[in-house]
Image 1 (cartoon, rainbow, N blue to C red):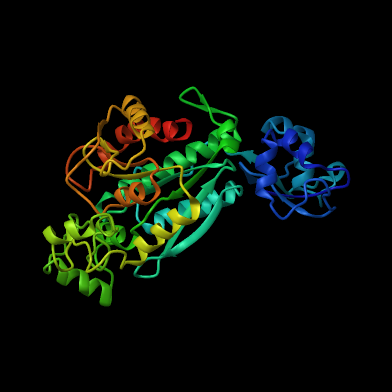
Image 2 (cartoon, rainbow, N blue to C red):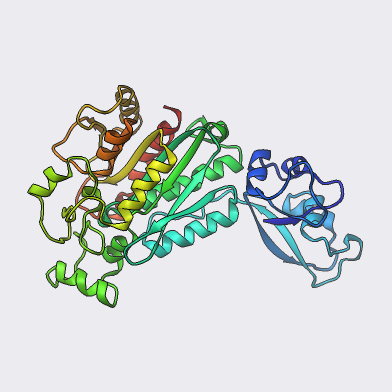
Length: 395
């Protein structure tokens, strides 16, 4: 929600007027000097939207403010061209509406367009969220990273490395929405006060690593060369529900130089719906973007969300730091998931992250069943995962 600066206004006054933490207003307006506002300058107020109301007979600002439970001065800020003493029937008045509800609905087929619509809406309501394009998919779709917070500890979450595990993107985005609601409304999540994390932790999120693959699973093959290639790889079968790879048939979570050659020797040797590690490591734009992001951000810990199994993999070749065990045991406690240190699998993002950065890395396998998991499991999975998201911040 945008307002215009008046003579004598300060960001501190706006924070009190709208009951929004001052640091969130400051970070929503990075081009504005907090100590020298200019009259007429546009200020973004996070956590608010506006509704429109048409003046009726007998209306006054006081009456409207009382009925809508807002202050008269918020109406004045949003309607600078209206004279409160000369309201006319039929005039439009903007009303501030504090957002106390989710705009993300994860419990639905969550393809790239749904993701981008949700990102755009969150971007509008919560302008303190920083948005970066870290690369493009094979088909040119934007690979988006979202950052929240100003803390020195950078915690990373990602989802949909595998196409038919798209439910992970929905879970991440819904929790992000809940986290932003807690920040702007000064609320707790499961009894945990959220606002202190904003200055302690920077959260880095790539909600959908494989957007082309996700769209292929949910919507079927696209028209043109890429769709035709996918159909050939899938042996003409139009059912892509078992597809894990990117649109070129490369499994993105077998693309990293962490004993890549071991997996390459025992996995498919040409593009396939799943498990083909590519002809060499880091050939795909999605995996390159994620590798470069890890190098740029220096994650203090990394969580890659997958499905299924209700387990958390946390070790790689004994290179994981000792505190990884403490962290994963807390993840297990709050979720009911089983920590598993080693598995006979290599070349994943978690493996490479631990190998190259020697920081805690985790592959979190949500839910039980056959991928893609049915949306009937969504609410249960979400409730199990909330504790892991929170624990990644405080551990």
